[in-house]
Length: 102
Image 1: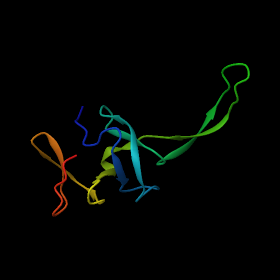
Image 2 (image 1 turned 90 degrees about the horizontal axis):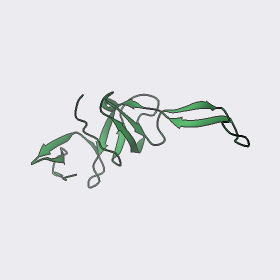
Image 3 (image 1 turned 90 degrees about the vertical axis):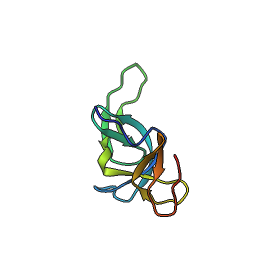
């Protein structure tokens, strides 16, 4: 199990795949699988069966997990997708002349 560089609630940008360039919020993190779920990214259609009397079944759009290596953290200060550095236990923006601590 590896330590993740993103946390729930962070804003990230997708680097590759169908949703390349899309920015979104991290909904869930799975360090065991090294995957993240990002809002409005990697949407799949799920068939839902009605469970109780009166419930409605049908097709539901669901966000699915993508590998954490396919996303980069977006710095709130400079607005760029950036690699993450560490300084005294805090995450730091690696963009030139920024140095924002997350």
